Amino acid sequence: MKRLMYLLPLGIFLVLAGYFAVGLTLNPRDMPSVLIDQEVPPFDLKPIRGYEKGFSSEDLKGQVTLVNVFGSWCISCLAEHPMLMEIKRRELVPIYGIDWRERDPEAGPRWLAKRGDPYTLIGDDPESKAAIAFGVTGAPETFFVDKRGFIRYKHVGPVTPENWESTLWPLVQELRKQ
Image (cartoon, rainbow, N blue to C red; front, side, top):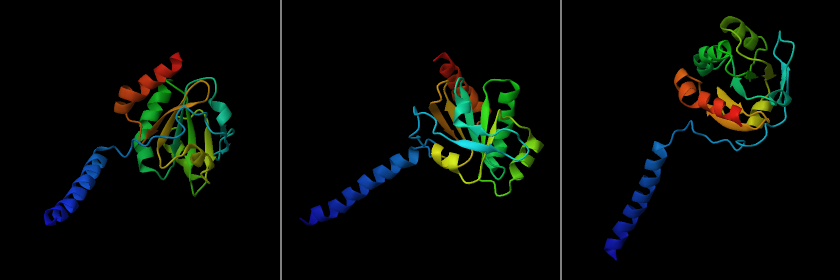
């Protein structure tokens, strides 16, 4: 009986250690979205300052598109911006932007004026209405939307040349075939 009393805590410890070990091997960026294979949630965003047209869920139908959530305050958005500009320059796929949680309404337009504007349309989302509808947890996040307006993939973190070539561009090409 005494031996069992020593083995029970050891067994519990080993089971918990196993769960923690598996958890440490998982990538925290691989956060599945409940919206995968669901229609883009309805939203209608006003334009950012200095822009004529806003951005709504209706704009995403008829072609494969990317929806990129960014903010001028976001350091990772700054890191991914050259790649977005390259995608636009090469006309690979239309990119729509959600300017998320800007405290200063001039910050987003200023940021884009300085760095370039890769977006087909941009919506202003200071109160996170569209971001909440998409289930955004941080910026940048990029959603890949098919021709029917269904979300097919969520990329968390910056779009880089490496992940664009290995995963994201092949996904765009596959979605165009559907």
